[in-house]
Amino acid sequence: MKKDIIVTYEETLTQTVTLTVDDEKDIDEQARQAYLDEKIVLDSNDLQYAQFEIETPFSDWMTI
Image 1 (cartoon, rainbow, N blue to C red):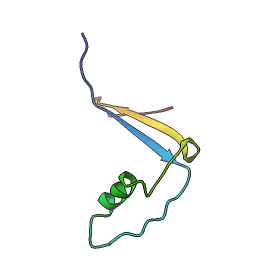
Image 2: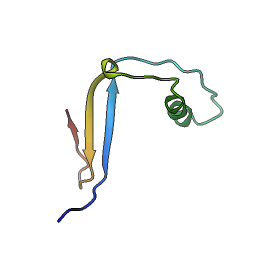
Image 3: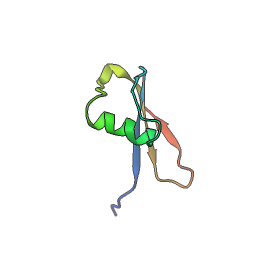
């Protein structure tokens, strides 16, 4: 039997990116929007490793 599960995929960066943000607005949302607007462009060299988290009672991360 197949069923849908929630999987979270997270990439860990090897680089630090500097953004100019408005501290009166939500910083997480501004960072997310900068990525969507391609102000932050990543390639495979920017990634150190990736992690998957599946929906379990313990919500454990698996590093690949």
